[in-house]
Length: 74
Image (cartoon, rainbow, N blue to C red; front, side, top):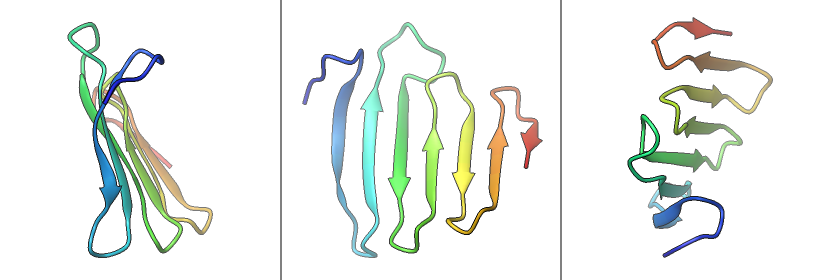
């Protein structure tokens, strides 16, 4: 699957737990070319970003952001 937004969607769908996922390929120009996004049935979601950072939100106001160097922030 392709996109005009600078990435290709390599897979997407819903797993057996009812969680939606989307895997994106940004190519070799970014540090984390194969990243993904999950939206969970409990309202939480998780992003693995092209720059190597991650973001998790528990759906209840709590979140954790981790930079590409591995340091975390709440």
